[in-house]
Amino acid sequence: MALIVQKYGGTSVGTVERIQAVADKVARFRQQGHDVVVVVSAMSGETNRLVDLAKQIREQPVGRELDVLLSTGEQVTIALLAMALEQKGCPARSYTGAQVHILTDSAHNKARIRDIDDQRIRNSLARGRVVVVAGFQGVDEHGDITTLGRGGSDTTAVALAAALKADECQIYTDVDGVYTTDPRVVAEARKLDRITFEEMLEMASLGSKVLQIRSVEFAGKYNVPLRVLSSFSEGEGTLISIEDEKMEQALISGIAFSRDEAQLTITGVPDQPGVAYNILGPIADANIEVDMIVQNVGADGTTDFTFTVHRNDYARALEVMQDTARRVEAREVSGDNHIAKISLVGVGMRSHAGIASKMFETLAKEGINIRMISTSEIKVSVVVDEKYLELGVRSLHDAFELDQEPAGKSGN
Ligand code: ADP
Ligand code: ASP
Ligand code: MG
Image (cartoon, rainbow, N blue to C red; front, side, top):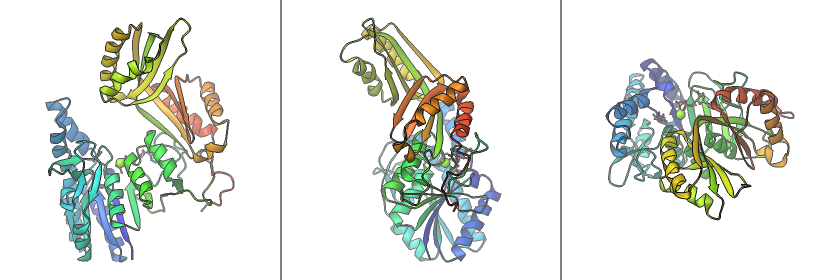
């Protein structure tokens, strides 16, 4: 008998029928004698609907009130799922984040979990109930409702699994595992049996939204066995775990991509010590995160400087830069928010040169211009025009033969 934490995403609980199907699945685990804690998201589309409502009142809603609003989505699903379970003769209780003391900091809309008091959950499990917890939400030290950022139910599930020392944390979604790239973009994408925390974290950070970044960080830190599976079909899904020698040694495990990007360029900046600080200082002061940075070597005593930010921060960053340009007497500020980032990820890259050049060659053959490049030990990222995103991802998937099992793998 095991203790399992299961999380069902928005599509998996998108209708009453689907909630009933989830209840069937959960009840089967319970019948096998396992203790089950279930975390659910809001019904699909609900969180977006609530965000839209708030924006009709104010473009930048007050964080505290937005959290009160957004947390209602998950409260609906916990109640419906608990009712469906009871209806099937499976004792269940629903709890909001506050009721099971998911204590977070006070950073509304992107709160971090600090502590979980698992006593109430354990008591409920001990009475033979399935415990149904609202994902994505917590409560801060002042008793105010907080939310954990989009996709945050994944993090609720992993945090609960860590706190309860669960045997496994299962993330049920609308695909049957983690693929070499988003299967909605590349039909030939291949499901991975296993992937390391490190690679999954890189994939998530570079745009693969199948798991929230923080959930992977959390799982890695507390070594929570994490599995992504389909709520609609049977199967082993993908196990995310620490690296071991038996694991397939593919050079590249996947391709991540992101449309949430925008680029800013400031040209003709007098080149002197402090340029980078003068330009990026005000951006940091405006609480805008910078991703890639490129500075050219100037020949005529001036330099050009380009960097990328999240697309949501584009308008604000442009304003800040126009201010900066006047101050440092730069020639011009320009920008583009129709760019995208494509990244190759793999721990096998560490010991192999030539991955980057093959990537550049592949994109060149398709006539795709690379605007920026950045590399680390286990990834190579390029920025391209957004209109080439899908073509780029498909041609790279093909060129690196990611649709095929890596050689030497036994095929478990
Ligand atoms: P949920 O509502 O269950 O949390 P999400 O939409 O957050 O589901 O995550 C699942 C989606 O992630 C899939 O439908 C798929 O389009 C997308 N996705 C992106 N990259 C990958 C990948 N590498 N493997 C699998 N799915 C991916
Ligand atoms: N409902 C929230 C969202 O749509 C949290 C989640 O689904 O994980 O982002
Ligand atoms: Mg999700």
